[in-house]
Image 1: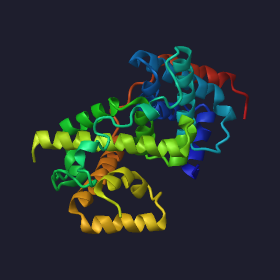
Image 2 (image 1 turned 90 degrees about the vertical axis):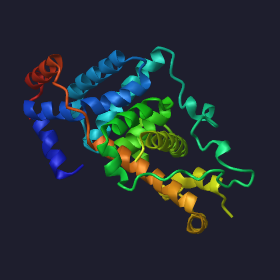
Image 3 (image 1 turned 90 degrees about the horizontal axis):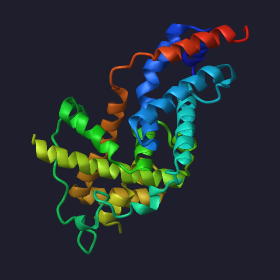
Length: 206
Length: 82
């Protein structure tokens, strides 16, 4: 935790309402995204995030600052969302790890010939780079939709590693998965998203 | 020798720097010889960069729920003096 964050936590502890508003504004949607991985509906995910804020208010004075504020918040929301999902009987740890082996867009075997060489090399993307691609609002929306269609744990890992930019270890701790599983899930998630982007780029032209 | 399929299967390990020194060397050797795989790896890198940018550009922040704000106020009043 850096000095600025220490100061920010101090403000929260002092009951600074502005700091709290800032905290909620910064994290509400991001926490919602992770909660939604575990929750069947948007409403349930919103409840989980609501509970998370109450837990944060109650727990703030005991927050030991060994982790970042972000890691602490994501840990709380993940734990609570998992508890909800388990109670509903819809959560089996890392359930989609094995089931998704040869799924579409997952480095499908039809990409390669018997020698493992490309049948058809990937098509070129416009040269504008990520910035150019992202400027196109429809592509941004479509990428978010593509994330939402990933199997649950792939979505969770991509959310923390790529959208949040967390280190692997931090994501593993929050999600309660091993480093090996994390890497497999990240690989499958990113592979599918590249495929989704390639289809979008092909469809929308240069 | 690595083939193209191997490259698509190991690309995340490569980008995450989880390959051993030798594996990394073989990987790069294949890339040096294979334009299609170079393009594939570049697109995987672009994909992660796009995701990162997407994460840094969140939707409009929502208004704070009045019940949560109320709880924060109440918490402040009941908090032990520091």
